Image (cartoon, rainbow, N blue to C red; front, side, top):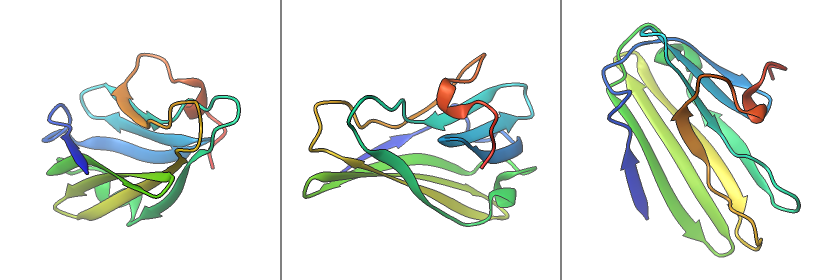
Length: 123
């Protein structure tokens, strides 16, 4: 199991957090936008399988926790993104099939323009 802490967003407040096409968009009060997504390739299978919690709990209050936890089980890799404010917790659960030649990594990073997976067409 591996854990990554996203210090860059801890203490920042999100104006909005929303699911889009194949990802999640975080618009922060400081003007930055972070995207959580997986760039699909050919024959692989990686998807946002579940969101536990209310996305509005992540809006309007500073993030107290922002972390990624990954683990493997059989041929699958699970990646959990866990966020918390004083209003509540939200967990995003991604799953990828490791029986693939391609990467099953999920990204959470800032961009000036959205990656394809996070362009409008909201879910």
